[in-house]
Image (cartoon, rainbow, N blue to C red; front, side):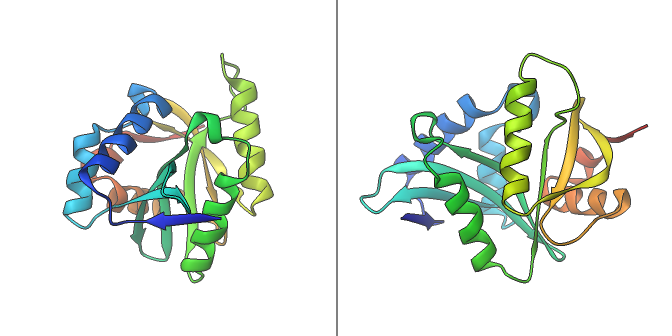
Length: 179
């Protein structure tokens, strides 16, 4: 069983920050201090994923906007991966926000690179949980990406509005449609 906690101590936020830094390449993450600032402003929520005994299992950074729940950043502690905790988090988010479509962007698994197999496993994980890919590909800050959703297909224009709400209007200038 997992617990989703969005009332985190300074110590817990520090541990989440360390997990954030090791889980995402520098070109795919905003500075953690900026994530915390966006949370203070109410634009994002930072949720720790904990065991019943309070151990950190991972985190989810979300934005609620329009009819979407944007899963901005999501990571499970490396030695806890593959044990169902990620699945539990997605199922719990679906239960907590049944009216919302969960929207994510993931690295494009159709691009050959050093971690192509990891990208394919990530996509398969989300597909098993009911996500489907939008019929377009994007470059987000230069990273070839796929947009996935649980309930609704979003046009590129709709996704740009969601992305702007989640990150900023400046950040949306770094989202390009791939042909």
